[in-house]
Length: 395
Image (cartoon, rainbow, N blue to C red; front, top):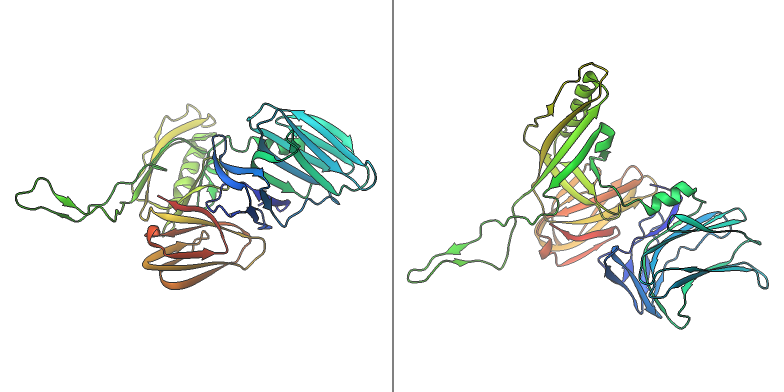
């Protein structure tokens, strides 16, 4: 968790009244007027602001220090303008950038000392000197009467990011990452070449049926569908610098599955704020196909397939962000069906049910924790939490 990230609004939230802040500040933005979360072809979901719509957060740009502001934006017009204002008469910097209408543009604004740098996509488009301490910043398009833009993934840092870091933010969504109990597969020399079952439709369990004499076919209960467990298949390859290292790396990776209980498997296909998370087990053996290197110091590669089983596949996913030790996540539910909660730190609470039942969990260490609530999520009558709702339902 980057502690210099003081505001992160990805605008991928299920709730239409606010946008969750995924930084340590948890300065969620309240939406009003014609500010709405919409489906967007480029981002999946984004913030649309029209007319007098607003998205208001308590977190402000720290003008008295270095800062970096990054944003993805689309406008129906062919120009985007920005103004950095400083105290005094005519003490401002104003520039306009030509853009293609309705095309996603990445912009970054970096203040380092009295220097101000602006990036558009992967190029620097402005470098200037600031007079005094700024006290305002505005971003606009050619329509001066009302706003009509689509905004995605706003990030604010209280330091000046280096050029490499800015470009990494723009390209942060290019790769797919896989984790088991918090460890990246790549830390063990393992890459995933293909996957099955991550988002496939689950098979339905057998329902109550009845057969009546003198009627065609059968009568099937179709009101309350229930689903079977999820099976995830990963095609993997592992590489090492020698025969000995190969055996050691294979054993190290497979030993991750030896601990008792479930294992937290996470796939990050796009944004880190919307991971696919599962509580899984590895039941079957794994066969590693390999050819021994001719010399012990020769690079070796092996391929294998692992099959993971998720017993409780229907779930709601939350995120708790703790900046200090002993922060508390709280969940209150009204449900007649039992729910299981996996807190993301290896602990769990089983059989949660009742009227306005509140369950709390204390995290001993600071960090980001993805919480899974599994069960008949569709039958939850009331729900509230101090955590971020990442997925209302994932199955």
